[in-house]
Amino acid sequence: MDKSYLKDGLSNLTTPLVADACVRLGLPLRLAPQGIQSVISGCYVAGQVLPVQHYGSVDIFLEAMDNAAEGDILVIGNKGRMDEGCIGDLTALEAQSSGLAGIVVWGCHRDTAELVQLGFPVFSYGSWPAGPTRLDVRDPDALSVARVGNLSVSRDDFVFADDDGVIFVSGEHIADLASTAHSIWETERRMATEMRAGNNLRQQLQFSEYLAKRASDASYTFRKHLRALGGAIEE
Image 1 (spheres, rainbow, N blue to C red):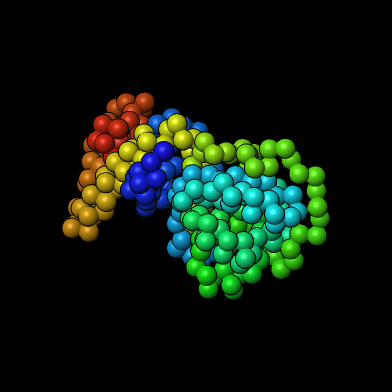
Image 2: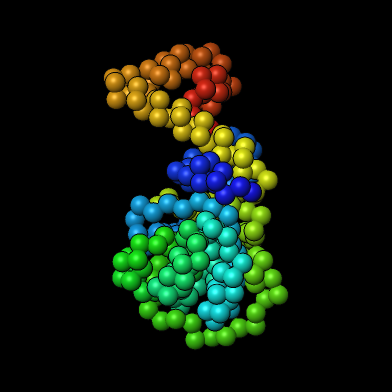
């Protein structure tokens, strides 16, 4: 896919917007397990997944970066381990110099102070001072699939990460998702502007009319009402 499209079409699509677009399109919500956070608050990344499964040695990350494209996100499956910091500042520096846009770890990081100083986006489940002391058997698909929770992600997937969490989307749906998410964003920004001008949310959503319709028709849900109005909340 054209990387210029990624830069223009996926930039600033927050994970809530992506999640709402998935719901609107009937796509599965492929979310990383709750608790993942950015090392630096306010970071945002979106791009194609560069998958890797950690087995105890940093060479797997270097090998993955040999096949990286500009703007990729290194997604590391480390079984959600909280007893080792599997990446640190040197891995992040190498990722940055390789043109990657960020790192997402299903596990922990270390070298927090150095990562903050570097400013490179890293998302993990927290910090742990000790690196890996194990060396497991490397999976045959260690460079083609990353496992994050109960998800398996590959080069066919895209990842979005920010302060709210991490979500994955199949590449076959990425164009429709981007268009839908931007449409939701435009609707929500328009509503927010109206609220600041004094037109509150209940007025915009004709809430009194909804309550009246619901009183006479128990099947009339708020989501049906929103669909009729083109509102973005909940859908």
